Length: 617
Image (cartoon, rainbow, N blue to C red; front, side):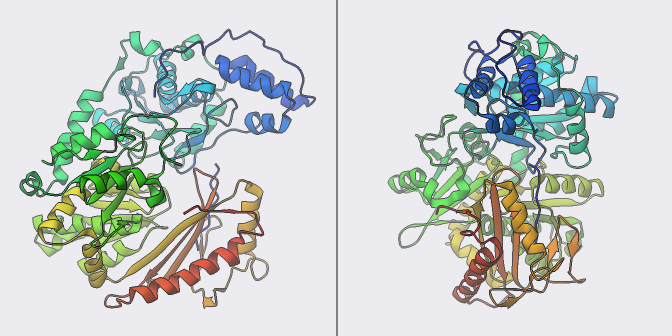
């Protein structure tokens, strides 16, 4: 059992967002001297009229708890950088906190890299925006650029929205010291984020994250008026636009993942693509062209940027059929058999396939990983027939993901490793392995995050989409569907049946109470011994460091994981039945897994007792 508790669209010109720093500096007292100090500090530093007005309105309404929540704590780096709702407050994403974060980042980078003033930084942004707080990802990226430019640091700022993987790709390609992507990926429309990449292209991890946070704390007051000038990027010679160069290099390098271009040109299959109101449409179209395919059919209601994500109840394609409705309807009308959906920042990919009879099969992240892992090794082996070559080949997965790649590795002879949850751990491990001449040909996390090859050390929905298309086209020529090939994989390597879901908990103390109870389930420092009447043989607690595993402990049987999300108020749970090759009673495996999953939820999380909100299906 794994438990961890991590801390955790352009709108034109500034539209009158920036105001007089000293206007209405003081407002009425809240009655709490410490809170008054925080309010005064905010109003002294913030030059965004809209977020200033939000704080003033909360003070006038006497909403002290709301003010404390916003002003008396700060954001911390989680599994995807800084991420929070947009709006006024030191623990929200807004003009001031982005300026503060960038000042701290500058301070740390200038100490760490002697050549920082020549290497510079890469900045990108997605299509998010919130009119009531005057925030858009583009504006926030320009303010981050202004901070760097005010210190004479070169800035490679993309001129338009790009997929998240483009930022780490550009960091490596341009030799930049770091990169920042303004995005909240698939989070609700109210959120935004500040994702930092190191010079190796991987997301920052310890100790850099902690030291950058310390630097931010030491640089809270905006340095100068220049930091608020988003127009600075238009007139400063130190700013360059890397879009054309990076897009061209990315699409050229992407063809290294194309193995059957001649077949692609004559592919009879039709594909539908949804970009979920985000950045993906144009980039996926170009990727299909690079592979020799006709362009996928876009979902018209979802192909253009919309920060309100108007046509979906939530902008996360991982939610499955309920959020893919428009895509599936279009596919039915167009007689397309494959639906591809990238999330708003195009780093994740969901896939659905038309079933033989009726309806659609929406693949889980673990099922797609089985298919993509098989596909990448199948094509690698075609090009490397010497068995000894596998000693330099790796596949990676996060510890909460399916063990199917481990089953591949046992039989095929390549290496398999697990990392902690979050692609930042995968990205950094890819970098370490590359330094010793090893090659990572596939990596994934179960939350539909995939990396085929290692051209960018980050999950990539654009490359994954076109790789899935080529795999589907190849299998179609062999009279096979994706679902049929998945069955073939399980026959060879063993069935891996998994369930992944979550409950929502908006009260952090309740989360702490739940995990404390699990850690003292049968008395002090005594973890549970059974779940649903089944004996627990191994418990691993990443937060405390406890691990009851033995050497060579193989994952045959049921593996269950509990963890908190690093980006949303969720407790996630994962279960998987890992069967040996030849055990093909899928229905029995699913039944047994269902019982254990229900017991895990009811016995350990106690949703009703703890007022947890179950996932809507």
